[in-house]
Length: 287
Image (cartoon, rainbow, N blue to C red):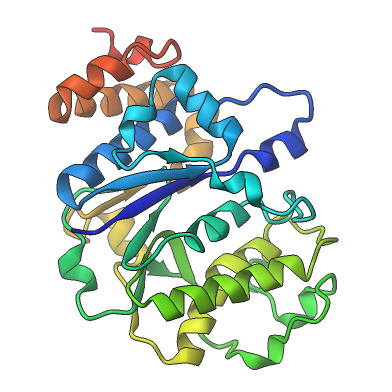
């Protein structure tokens, strides 16, 4: 049995949309449901760690039941001075800092279709895949002038970053070291103005760097060609790279959501009946 968690920190949404009303797109709600329910069937319990706004939103839709270990608004405690524009995924790190090992951090747009335990046996940490060190995404230390007091020289910059759409932590000391280091970096750069490089360094590159520094047993569970070419044995679906394409092409959006709804009805009929009551999702469950 492996315990997992989703996370949702809404502060970045309200920083970008001060007068906005919080909502999650239909395709994201459907993948969230598939992600949670499939995890429960194949692996073990899952919880949602979020803030109060996210909890109210899921409750208003009648979706709290997706997480059998509950929905916990711990992210209200994220410090007010965390730069939510630059560090839009900081909530994941604060959520991970509250989870004892072993645990699995899963994005709401990633579905793990099979038991994960055989892939992580004997590991202290793992992530879905490695990332290439592309300079525009993963630049060198000189690209972080807003950071004050963080010791960039303490790490090996040749290590390929981990993608953390799914990340396993089996060693509690390492989990604490990684989250402490990543959060220290976030707090070192309250004036960061780049919405990509600071976040992926703090979340993804630092995970690989911390693993190398501590010499823990860490591994990638797949790679990009396998994930998108179907050669990873049907273990994972990650929707991230398909989102903008769906937004640009309504027919693709409709087809994807209908396929998710059909899979929910096939695999989880009782849950699907409840999910189909969500007004924004109901059209995709119609025949």
